[in-house]
Length: 251
Ligand code: PEP
Image (tube, rainbow, N blue to C red; front, side, top):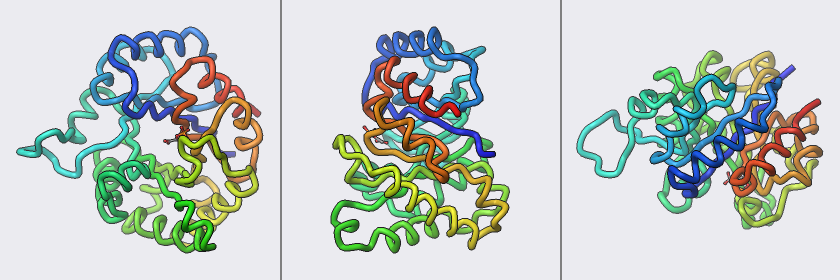
């Protein structure tokens, strides 16, 4: 039985004061549960978040990381820095990074390997655009992305990795993939990991759905056979809606 994993991607929202408010609200509401919860605030809020999350079961994650170890890379943040502020997870390959910062599957794969080598876990995003879905090439796009981002991974690497399937057309648009549309792609990803690794590895592999997940649609999505959690954007910025989504993941 795979554990459900719900992660909140705060994107470029919340200063340190707002971070403290949100984390404190989450702490006061969140019950101890069988569901793994991760919050991914912006870099500037990681330290305060780490301090406030001490002693809770909520994990801390970052939204990206540099592929470089250190040195003259103005504006970049390294893996060592994220480790030092207590991150357990790092999101990589978000469609906004792919779109605005031209990140390739190859770069995302390099980042993911470095994250794993550091002892943190990558949440790797994949997803097709509206144009690709309308052309009927979703499966090809997802297959190429999954093969690319997992290139050179071992079974042990896969066990510490999460893939978030995020159809680009559903991110921040209010349009959600239907539970069946989402599950079909999750099933494809699981089949692919079975072929690339083993069926045993694929059975254990956590695949999140992301794209306009909200309290109203969370339960149905999160109870599809191949959907093991959610990567939540907009709806994670308010404690009530994030908690309602987590509740929707309960069996
Ligand atoms: C995201 O950006 O990862 C995301 C899923 O955003 P939203 O939930 O707002 O669509």
